[in-house]
Length: 113
Length: 112
Image (cartoon, rainbow over all chains, first blue to last red):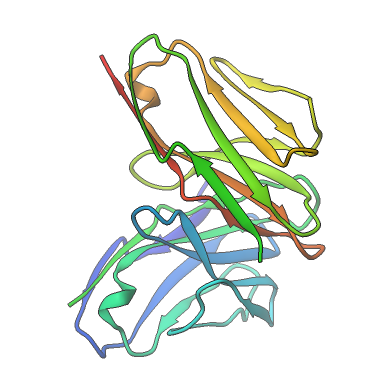
């Protein structure tokens, strides 16, 4: 069972470079989301989607873009990386029905120099 | 703005101790509260709580929700070194599809 798959696991970028973090799930979940995790701040929501073609901003959306062309995939784009975006990024998915816990990918550790 | 606050932020105990982790929240249209355990990688699901006063239990872990006072506790009895992790509390609220808001997490360290 693949669940939620994130790639890459690690990445180092230079300031100003662009990058796409990939996320795919095979559970036919409608809801997908991206979080960043920084020390002492828990998980903060960047963007989320409730289905193909529908996305919305979370708590910390600036500097990130998303799209949802299929149910399975939800890539996160950094258009011009900044050192403040150094973080661990988690993708998650769940069904929309009540009582559905989120399933997380293993994370991408991103460093911006 | 939805808010979830966990306490303590960190805790160091010895094997065999019992610990209580706290989570308080202010959320519009509360739907459920979830507890996760995070070791080296992704958070793993522990409990989902939707009703007040009903204890959820799994082995040495248990949790309960108080919707009147807006908090939840996670208890771990007879702690083991394998319980060392970050424990995250999250609340689902808002719109019908329910956005999760996470607390800062509690870092639990269990020494042998």
